[in-house]
Structure formats: C-alpha cells, structure tokens
Image 1 (cartoon, one colour):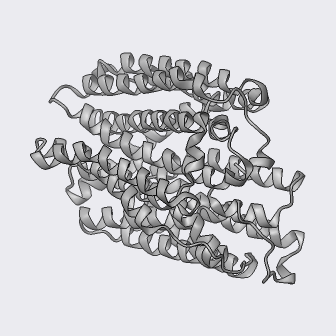
Image 2 (image 1 turned 135 degrees about the horizontal axis):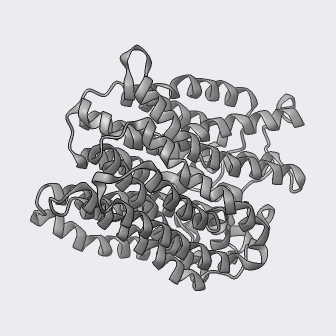
Length: 480
C-alpha cells in the first residue's frame, strides 16, 4: 500500500514472544480492526449527513466538506504515512495514528459547530492515512510468501467488502436509534473503544523495525496538497458563494500547482515522495486516470442518492441504508467471476463491467426523474445492475493498474493507487454539489441530472480500459 513494502527488512528488534504464528495473526487482527474503523468512517457518515446538517444548522457545502475533507486529507497523507513507518517503525507510527484518529473521533462527536466537525473530520483523515499503511507492513514483515500471506491479503480484501456493506447500516441504526439521545454523534463515539483496543493490541503484538535512513519529502507533500486544495475548495465553496473571482482563479491555478509538483518530484529522482520511474509505465499512468474517473463517479452516485432520498424525499437514514444494500448485493453476484478470470482477462472485465454500471446508473437516473412517485422497488433493480458491473471491476482494478510495475516499486505504486482513489472521492463529492445545485429545480430532476453525470464517468472509465494491462499478476508478488 505504500513504500514500506519495498523496504521490509528483517526486524532487528524482533521480540521472541511476539514472533510465533499466534503472535503474527494477533498483530494482523489488531491492524485490521483499526482499518475497519477507518473504512467504516468513510461510509458511515453518508446516511447521517441530513441529521448532522439539521442539528448544526449547516448548509450543503458543510455536508460536502464533512465527506470530502476526510477523503482529501487521507489521500494527501497516505504515501507519507507509509514512509513514516519506514523511518520511525510501524508499531510506533501505527499507535500514533490510531491515537490521533480516536481523539479526532471524540472531537467530531462533541462538535458544536460545522467548523469544529469539519476540522475533526480532516484530522481523522490525516491520522487514518498514517495508521492504514502499516497494515501492509505487518503482512510483508510477519507473513512469508505462501499460503499464510495469501490468506492475510484475502482477509484484508474481505474486510473492504464488509466495511462497505456495514458502514451505512451501522450509520443508519445509530442515527435512527441512538441511545442517550446522542443520535448521529454515536457514529463517531463508537470509535473510542475500538481505538483503545487497537492501541493496547499494537503495544503487545506489533513489532518494531530499526529506523530507516530515508527522509520525508515534506515539500512534495505541500505542493501536492496545494494542487488538490486549489481544485476542491472552489468546487465545494464556489457554487454556494456564487462563483466569486477567487474560486475561478483557484481552479485556473490548480493545473500549474500540479505541474510544479511533477517538476519538483522529477528533480528529486529516487528521493521523491513518489518515484518518477512509476510514471514511465504507460499502463500505470493510464490506470491512475481510470481509477480517478471511476471513484469520482462512485462519489457522485452515492452523494446524489443521499441528497435525493433523505433531503428530497424525506426517507429515514435506515431506509436509505437498507436500500443501498442493493449495490453490494450486485457486486457479490460477479466479484468471484472477476477474481477467477482476472489473471487472463482482467482488462476485458473492466471493459465489460463499466458499461454495465453506466447502464444501471442511467436507468436509475430515469427512475428518479419523477421523484414524487419514487419507491424502493423503483430504485433497487437499477442499483443491482450497477453493482453487477462494478463487481467485475472493483475487486481487480487496483491490482490490474500495478500489474506491469517492477517489484521494487510495488509498495510505492500501491500507495499512489490508494491516494488517487481517495482524491477521486473528494473530487466526486465536490462535482456532485456543482451539478445537483446548479439551478433550483425539483429534487428528482436534479438527482436525475447528477446521476447522468455519474453514468458518463463510468462510461468514460470503460472507454479508457484498453490502456490497462491485459491481466493481473500474483498478489503475493506485488503485495497489492
């Protein structure tokens, strides 16, 4: 997931009592527990947004920042988080990340203003980007290549699916039936016992490595953050403020900031935050574009449904969450097909899956156009179709993108891939607001228009698929 895979040397400070088979599985459980907490926090907030906005008297832009601020901060720190593990040791960095995430969760739950909640969410994203890369460090250093490592990666993959399904359900239940009158605040407070358990487990079962000689590329992080903020801030705030001159100037400046980052990284060669060698591989660069487009579309899709179904039609958080299960149900129908065929037909699966998802999204746009008569039965079939197409793509796409990357750079490539996924999510949330609220029209019409844009992004991702490598590679080699 980040560079620590490439530099996973033997642990000079390895503790014998932690070195056994039982110890490494317990260490894996600890890091997966924290990862589950992080992944659920990505999806759990969506169904609670209307309740949060009503309670804090916040506008739609605040709701966008509650989601996008987390994703953006996570994307910007993820690769650096992996390097921090190399420099200071994965256990120390993991504990610091979990502790910071837990404190930020407490602050989010106690938020008394929109600004306080947004800052807490950004802090959650930053500390999440510090702790999550250490998962790959545990797998790479504690599990030798073979059956156990394959099982460890499989458990991580299963965790992604469970988090995607359970996040909205947990959010819906806690928001609708929260104890002690806490309501939406429970979606953040629930992280406190989980975080404390993860810290205690990490102190007992994770191992430390010697300090690496690598240095952090802080100017590179700053330039990348500047480019991302120049793009996302005006997209979120510009519409609500009537597109003032500063927002247009920021949008125009964002490509130049990105170019400055690229030039700076090129000059640093192998000391760069992101090795420029990676981008000489056309399939990797093209794959990043596919990922960016795809996850932009996914964010538009789900943000639109939140606004339409809860704000527009008044559905309860739990009703929305249960309806949303149609999407992962569709994914489950085809995910195993993707896993079985990816080694020979990975690119072809993406070319088939993306148009199917675009079709399901276009059908959903048609169904919601007349929002006044919209029912669960009118939504679910189209969501299942979209999920079926996504099931052919999502389980294999990240591995497909790095299929032709040289083994020494696999860790760094995985970190870049995950950062692009989160950046696409942040951009998608911003674009959803631009399209949905462009003019004052009926919720069904606005939802249909925004979902049509999501369908277009899925179709574009399918059209770009021929630039990908034809097949995936063995996960045990790439560490992806």
